[in-house]
Image (cartoon, rainbow, N blue to C red; front, top):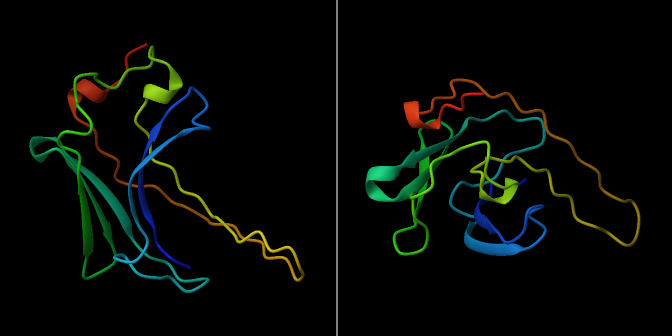
Length: 123
């Protein structure tokens, strides 16, 4: 299984359309079925970039969004869903037309999630 990094800008409220701003499916390598690994994502707003990491020792890949995206809209719950910043984990299995057909799933544990004070949503 390949570890892929994607930065996608949604073009509609359901995120059915949009633009891949960044795609890398080689730098962070592969994972064998049943293998556990650490994946991390950090936002570095001072340098206008996202940093993706995997494993120990850490393998890193960064996406610099200067000139592509801006940080003018703070995270908030009253904006349309396509404006929200989010992290998704997906298991994408090849759509084979002949058997045996592949299937897949992932078990994901999220821990140590930190946000800055301005990202806290107040109801």
